[in-house]
Image (cartoon, rainbow, N blue to C red; front, side, top):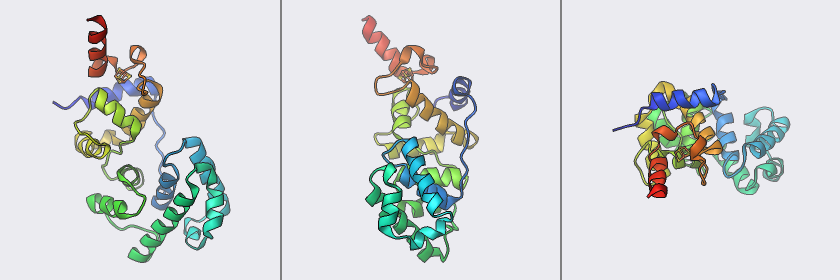
Length: 216
Ligand code: SF4
């Protein structure tokens, strides 16, 4: 039986409040999500600010000098790899569609994004959901951990859990629930979980099993 996502959403919203939904143009979101891989939001934002200050138009990145780009995004880490990936992604889109726009929808959009080097399942789903409003449910490490523990979905890998949640979570909840579950993963459901104060403790199988084990 699938969990009551509406209830999970309501409990988390009561705890964390309404979430600010970021709505960036698709190419901005794509570059930002490449920058955000394996780094903190703070370092990603710093790299993004430096990048946009130097190149206010995303199209300017097509002609940008690679070394300058690497230097600008240094705060985000893995800067040489990320700089190359950003340029390759934008060039691929320009070559394929003649402009920096992807005129695709749904699974076709997702599959195209996934075909870009360095764009994994989560990045593709983030861009599809937040910039195109397509009904995907991105699963990062926090959400994967929460989803396995409560549990919210079956699946061995992050991609499998993402596919399952994409089908199970009602579309109108996807954006906010994604953000709320990340908050839960950061504040309570960490690798060492704080179950006793967690807002989802009543719904969580992991917490019940742990308590049973401790009392037996
Ligand atoms: S009760 Fe514990 S394991 Fe369950 S979601 Fe909360 S923090 Fe995670």
